[in-house]
Length: 174
Picture 1 (cartoon, rainbow, N blue to C red):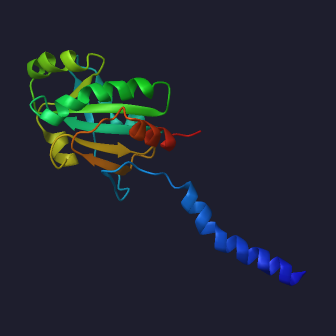
Picture 2 (picture 1 turned 45 degrees about the vertical axis):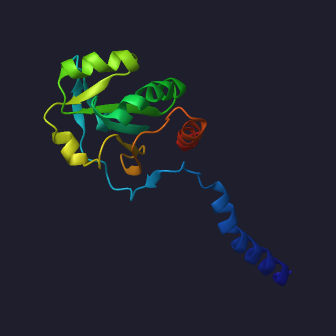
Picture 3 (picture 1 turned 90 degrees about the vertical axis):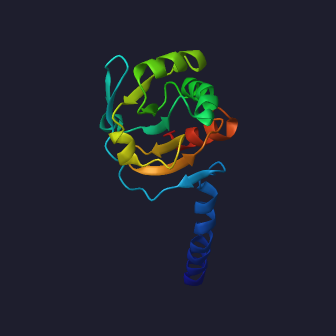
């Protein structure tokens, strides 16, 4: 009896890493895993003066996307971000766009033409962008429900693709 119990325990311990590996989330190519440090402060207003503070979004996954209208890849991916926002509606997920140091006029003349349902925060003085230190535009940080930086995407991509939507949905509570 004792031998059987020992064997069962050894088998369970041997299989545990296999079970844990099978439960890992497969992340899309090009997504960098970060160290989990706390996200820098982010408290900005949109063009209408409505304030958003990242602290108030705790408890949900947040995609923080730094962009500019002069950036070609940013321009191409805006419609995919709008489609992602639609697909993630009603979940514990938020999309926070941060325009980097452009005027309201520049943003207003661009954003409604490519993604009219998106709203962006305005980093008019560039200080928030400086705190977050994106390595070029677009840069997208994925922040976990505790406010920790978990993933980084550098460059443009199709956020509405099955690969990205499935990955983001797999992060959400079931």
